[in-house]
Length: 239
Image 1: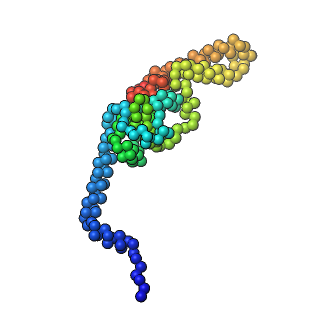
Image 2: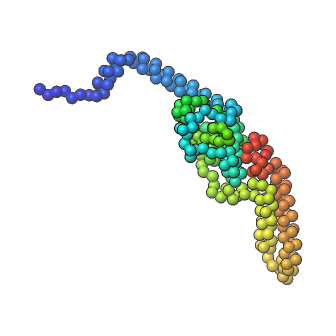
Image 3: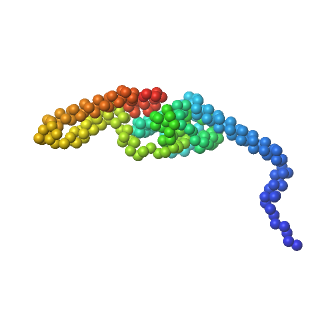
C-alpha cells in the first residue's frame, strides 16, 4: 500500500484553520495596514511641519558612522556647490516612499520618533519641483546630523567649478578679472592701431573689466543674488 504524499500547503492551511478564522485574519491584516498608514501620515506630518529640534534620541551604538556628518562639513559642501540646507517644511519636491520607509526602519530600530528633518538641495528645489540630488537628514545633537536618504539625480560634475565665482566676494572679483583678461586677449592685433602696445592692452583690459563688472553688478542686484556663504542656510527666496 502506497502512502499518500504530504501536501505542505494543505497541512499549513489546516493548521491555520484550527488556530484562527478567515475573518480574524482579515481583521488583523486590516489593523496592521491601518496602523502602517497612520504611521506614514505621522512621518509625513513631521517632515512637512518640521517640529523644530536640534537632536533626536538615537541609540548611538546603532548609528552607521558613514552617515554621520557635522554641520561644518555640510556648510562647506553647500558653499562649494551652491546648495541650501533648510528645514524640510520649505522643500517643494516630493518625498519618495523609500525615504519614509527608512525613517520607519530607523524609528523602530532606535525606538524613537524622529523630528527636525533637514534637506540639502539646490535653491530651486525649495521653490518648485525638480529632481536634483536632495539629501534628507535628521539632527543627532551638538551640530551633528544623520543622513537618512538620498534620491534624485547626481549633480553635474562641473557644478562645483561653475559655482566657484559665487562662493564669496573675493572669488567673484578674481573671476571677473580673469574673464576680462581672457576677453582682452581675444581682441585682434591692429583693431585700433597697427600694433597693440602694452599700454593699449591695459587700456582695453580696463574697459573690458568695467564692462564685465557692470554686467555682474547689474545681474546681482537685479536678481537679488547673494554669495553662497550667505545663502547656504537661508530660507529667503531672493537670497
